[in-house]
Length: 247
Ligand SMILES: [Zn+2]
Image (tube, rainbow, N blue to C red; front, side, top):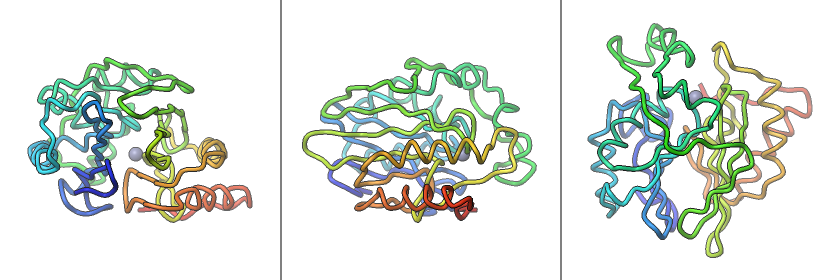
């Protein structure tokens, strides 16, 4: 589904467009001018459908050069191993969390609790995935026509990463994962590494950007005036409040 000039949605669960597996995050395909990259991989329970959706957007699987993960939660990273196998893409994730993904250590992402809570099927397996491109806060990746600034934005979890995408011929895009969503909402979880104070500090960091487009991990994207959504959350935090939760 094309949502902007070179941005496509190829996966989305119940908190979004209820299109692929119900637990899937939003998965975006971005045509970079030198192939395409995938933002987040979903749970891994709808890989066939996500691959069909990629084809329907006019891309061959081998055109995908990178799978960039916003964080380790299984609804974002669970499909990475299988999608990498099918595409040959490099997997990029924040360096500090790479070993957890490579080991498939579900305890580090509260997976047993999430299965018990019914977010994933009882027999769900989080597949380990090797990481070819460990990312660091402040890195700028040049991929095709665009630069992607890597920002470590912890709070929702320890290893949340936002990407700020800029290019000469397009408005700036904030790929925000589960750090901030449409309407300035956040994703607050009773998990071992959710930290409201860290999330507020991350929002302050994001509030300095001027994105026009917001691609969040769940819910609807914003195709204009994206900065307003970030500033709303930042303003609520600055007023000692807590932004509305998506769940
Ligand atoms: Zn998450």
